Amino acid sequence: MQDAQRRGLLIILSSPSGAGKSTLARRLMEWDPSLSFSVSATTRAPRPGEEEGREYYFRDRAAFEKMIAEGEMLEHAEVFGNLYGSPRGPVEQAIRAGRDVLFDVDWQGGQQIRNSALGKHTLSIFILPPSIRELERRLRTRAQDSDEVIAGRMQKSRDEISHWPEYDYVLVNEDLDATEARLRTIVEAERLRLSQQPGLVEIVRNLNTEFEENQ
Image (cartoon, rainbow, N blue to C red):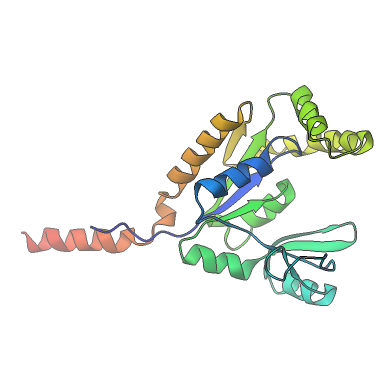
């Protein structure tokens, strides 16, 4: 008997900066190359080397705002004067084809996706640091930001962490390898969720037909 065709998942990863979200997202995609990363749309101009549909879908403000008004954005936000968001169309096509789509978004983006028309297909996971001291150490170890920027990220992390109860799963990232293993287990289990397996209806119908034929 063949496995029932499943629907894809919208996998939402959120965390305060420095908790390991981006590294875990990269590892998850290396583990399963069939996973696709959600390509965002933006109103900012392309940077050298960026391509339409690879880094971003580049749109002018009028086109972007029209997409919002027509419900074509799963989530959106304005950052430093530019709009960013996740177009609904490519994601909808992917999950209908049984492909999972990964979102690296903050709690506000995750909330919008969960409240969207595709919300029933979401799997949301929040990554916590083991301690605030360790969170700051990781930010400083990256050596990417000034003390002022790090202080801003630490200030913002308190608000972000307060939204942990809104997620389906919460993982404390004390050890990266162990957290990755738990993340894989969650994804594998959620792929078997009843709502993700529409083909089961036909399988059960066939089983009932066999029962009737054998009576």
